Length: 235
Image (cartoon, rainbow, N blue to C red):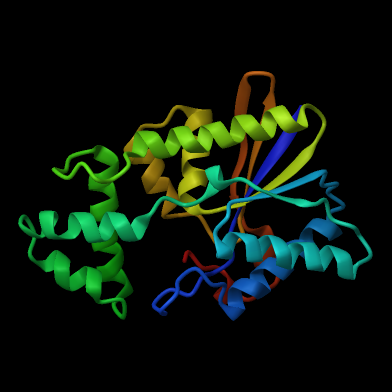
């Protein structure tokens, strides 16, 4: 039996020109996770990451923490199957269509200073995308996205076999799709789960042959032990 630990990337740069950059807090979260893994003596035999910068930099921060303690991390392998869905394309494509039903949507989605208003609008847009209730044919579907994530999981399983601990650096969407695969959740329940995934949290899946089982979800003990509430972030 092997374990896949899905690691959500550290806090990104929400509200800046380039979201796909770790913030200073995101780098700190990543280092804290690296120290936690070392202190718990978890043997890690394989590292994977999506190809997004925030995912790769989280992996690199943790590898650096290993190296500073004299532990040689496994080589990092890139799998685009663990990239996040294109939320910017979803927003820009669907916002005008849904604003016909709710004109306040345009104001809320452009108001990043009001995080609650932005999140309300964002959840509405992504929920509509997941449900498939929209006119445009240009967007990939949630079905395509979750199948891509499952293909990535299958590849990790094939390449590592039994008796391994594997870290996969990814994002909230792929984590929710992986949990959906293990629990049989509905599409909407899966995407709602993704809003709760904490930056650098660990979600553990165990597998043997064709079975994939959720062992733990959204574990942020490393951040809680640091004693700094500001480390618990969701973007």
